[in-house]
Length: 505
Image 1 (cartoon, helix red, strand yellow):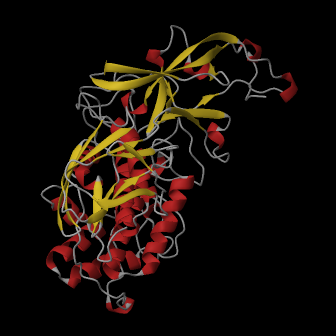
Image 2 (image 1 turned 60 degrees about the vertical axis):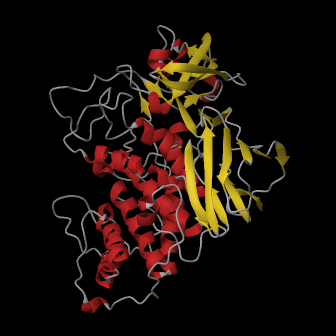
Image 3 (image 1 turned 60 degrees about the horizontal axis):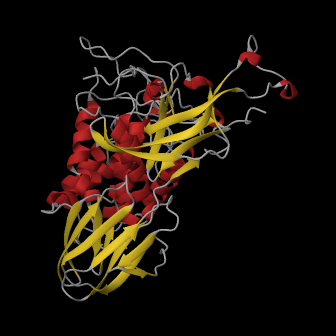
């Protein structure tokens, strides 16, 4: 999908239209590592400078910057950092050389920033070992260490990744900056490979944890983002700044450590760059939002106007406003959750196949006035976690399109305790579009459930399987809202994963 002269983040952000990554000729260098004995053997404590050094090299052409980035990556993993004051070598990603590491370990933000620098270095040097290492670690992280919301980091101590499948929802750390770091890594891997799974990861992160990190009034933020809240904790203080390891009942205006707001603003400022890319004969649309895409493709200027209410509605309308009149392809990401997607070209249903990269491609001589309509089924669905995630086995979450839903105590009937509810089997999920829900348009879901009466368990923390009392209690409809909107109406209990009746036995 992407051209041989691989697109780069700097130019994607600096385009006048900011929506399409251009073809550019980068400084392509054969990989030739400098001998370790000729360089210093120390490295940086909190990875991030690697990305900046590669960017400086791209701007200036001075190889010294690239070699310094390479040094920091080469030296890392040889236990060179002092761990006297805090942490251990894995905490700093300093226990295993980058090219040998198979998963993400330690401080979550450090780990994903390092991966972003590794992919940047690969793009400039072409060293396949770097790309292989980045892909291996990203795949392990996505499959075994990522929450359904896109959160990273399950341990408060060290703001760190845990073991594989260690994903307790109520103890999730999920630092906002870690998810932003994954967006940065996934974007680079998308540019390097053209594979839609990286755009899928960006979508999950953007619509869930990233969106949840900031209050709807834009006056507060979460540093860490829980995936379950058993009780309604006190609201955030207004006269002090909470410690970063605390997630109060509402979003504070500021934390003692305030890396997240600037990171959020940086992500918003660069958001347009994630929407689309181009190659010489095709435009790929990765994220669906109202926008205008301008690019030179197939030898001429092209403009696409995109109109959509996604993800509330799954219809994406693309109108060709300008085109060179030659053949080129319009390529649409088909999300991994989407079944039975359809494409109409000028009102006619188009037959398409999803290519090996995950995109539906329509190739023709596009003319001004042509209209393509992509329809994605954003209906609600039930999702279960990998059976090795012990913390949520026997429970389900609700997703609708790319949006993860949560049950918040404030929406439930009086007296309902979210710690004692379950969903009824085969219950119908009902959608309701609220035109002004917390100041925005949102889809709210209701699902048949039960407020369990657990009197049969009184005084007992466990029972023999054959002695488990039958599930009973008041049947009612439970209300679910987009996870991104929770904790905006005062402190409350909240959960994403809920048991299904009968799963205890």
